[in-house]
Image (spheres, rainbow, N blue to C red):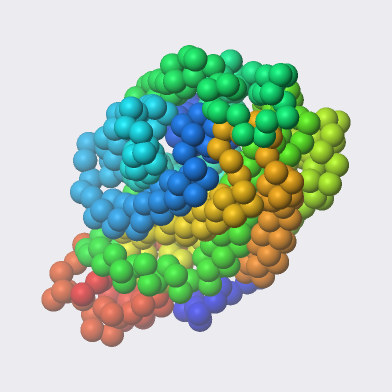
Length: 532
């Protein structure tokens, strides 16, 4: 069955009947999907607890100044972002083992990540050097989290080559990660709740705006935070072991084995791919908006709204809504299309503005539910789109090994970098507004700044991100055509391992695999791939 030579873009299929009626091999069992999905739960549990409670811990428990807290968050996120290209470089060149190419990284990072997370919530007896302690451990946590998350997220591409099965595995993964997010924030919040009992100020001193941290924090605060950290840290080795036992890695037959692309050359290829540019640019803003809203919700409820007694319930509702809506969003995007469903993220805009303008309990609960569903979609969508982008790249560029981890690691790098900038600048803005660590009552400027951070800032970033996503070029029709053509190539074309002397000169340097195959067929050569 001959394949016609293509131009730079995909040619539309003439008839819907041309699509293959049977799936490519690679059906995943429910057990495999569950084992894969549970492997990401600990990272999300730890990240969720840090997202909701680290700012409160640094400012009101550790008692470090807001400017130092800003530097801790910025340095930590920056180190995590810097680890992404390093992780992509190292992992893309890793040899295949009995467990695969990616699984050993997940297993190896797990125990170190657990220890780092535990010490992140420790109160060291080093006085003024506490800021350095937290910056170091938050940076290590972010870096090790990257070394686990990059191979874990890229593993989707190696579980199966069936796009529908990959989307299903992604839905399982995102549901379990949302459950991990819910569990992490809930468990952490319940354990440390005794350290932040209302009223924060003794009644006799309500007029004093600058009470010490000790007056509002339980004597057992340090132990409570360390217990919470230990519970979450203990899930790392257990869940990653289940992942290793229940999954196997499968290489794509439509890949050139002879030579790996150099990292920076591969990075250049990925960054020049137009669909990838649009996806990364849009979720730079959307993911930063989600991080800002999560990070300042607790501080907003504590200092800018009469919602302190509802704080734990609001966090719980956000996460429950996210968990429950993830399967719905997966079902909906399969029927409507990923690009069309993306506009559901826009529900964050009116809800964020409403909470900042009318910070009452009924409004807060309604906003928490809507925000949770939007956050679920914002978390699910990019990971569902990335495999489509990798397949699109494979079809129109040289399908070399190692590019999958470069796609995933560079995406995480850019989103972490945007989060680092957004959170660092936001926390620094509290310092300029006059935030006082440990104070039971903040100034009016701080209250206004918290309302801006919870309302105007995420609103503007979401609108910018959705505007960029509106020009995302991979439609459902293009995605189906890509899957069809790749499936045809996998069925027809055995990957032949050839030496440089066996390559035909007219196609050995060709940049597009399909035209190379066409040239090989015209010349009567054995179909295969050559890389010199």
